[in-house]
Amino acid sequence: MTVPTHLVRPEIRAERAYRVPTTIEADAKVDQNESPYDLPDEIKRAALDAFAATPWNRYPDDRPHRLIEAIEKKEGLPAGSVIVGRGSNELSHTLGLCFLEADTPVVLPSPMFALYASVARMHGAKIVDVAAGPDLRHDPDEILSAARRSGAPLTIVTTPNNPTGQTIEHAELERIAEGIPGVLVIDEAYHEFLDGPTATDLVMSHPNVLVMRTFSKAFGLAGVRLGVLMGQPEMIQEIEKSRLPFLVGRLGEAIGLEILARPELVADRVAELKAERESLEAWLSDLEGVEVLPGAANFFLVRTPLDHTELRAAMAERGVLIRDVTGYPALAPTDDRPGWLRVSIGSPDENRITRDAFAAILGLEVAAS
Ligand SMILES: Cc1ncc(COP(=O)(O)O)c(C=O)c1O
Image (cartoon, rainbow, N blue to C red; front, side, top):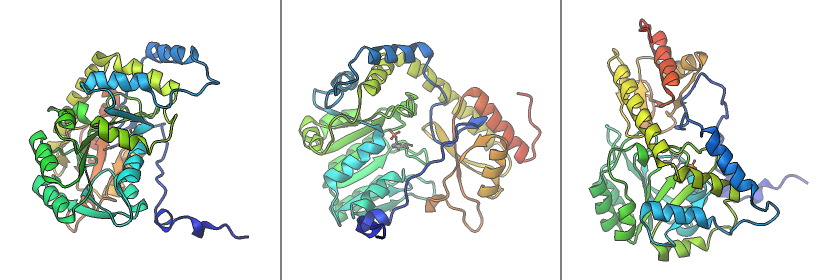
């Protein structure tokens, strides 16, 4: 018998599996917007001890109640406003399950974190694209009118946006929430790096707002897999019906609780990463022929006179992994400009190595560092 792959839904068969190279061995791994900082050993030990003291043969709570309560308290939200998932990637599937059917319009500004479009396609939804302007920013009026025109039950925005690092102002988010016919999801994966308010307050003032967060970036827990969805309890209660029980086990919960108990550690690291970002962006921007799009998150975009493929390969040869984002049409090369590359902010050592690699490749004298 042949393998009956034709029985897999055509929307799934049409997708490409989301595969990310798992190279960790690099002198500067600045390609996945991760935190360069692992947790200190004593914090890891405390989480492991808390986990070891629990019965491993017993199911955990159907959902991680203690972590949920800690997040509600931190965000000033009432009980029942938070879902914790296995990373926000996993929660984006929940959004698809809850809001998208075949031909449902969904407003997705582009370029934007690619997973959302993939989830939409897998449900057969109709993506209503809102293209960024030449400055790679999105016009809130265009998002508003796309949502109104299509009647989309779901509009998703990311601020700061990945892969561009650009933002939508809080007042504009509020205007979008008030003007659209459906639900507005605001993905704040990088909000800790932003000099500005979060959108959490909109959750309670606007019943159609959901805010998505992750422990993978500023909290440095990409390997643990914890993501957060916040909304008004009535909405969260409905969404919960689509969720599998036990998705987050006791270990993830213990680790999440440890990091939430240490806001000063996170704040110190974020402050350092922001200062490093500014200095690397400024250094690169001063170079002849180099264009930098400064970001409000822990990464920025860069293009140089070199072809983007050559530049990325030359960086990799020097042990620096950066991300080719030219798969997004808005970031692809044009007749007169090479494509954009995305550089995340690493540790000070990684950033020095990254800077020296750029300097060597672009033929500059490397200043003593
Ligand atoms: C905008 C955005 N949302 C969500 C995620 C995924 O986060 P998680 O690790 O929680 O699945 C990313 C990861 O790069 C992202 O850039």
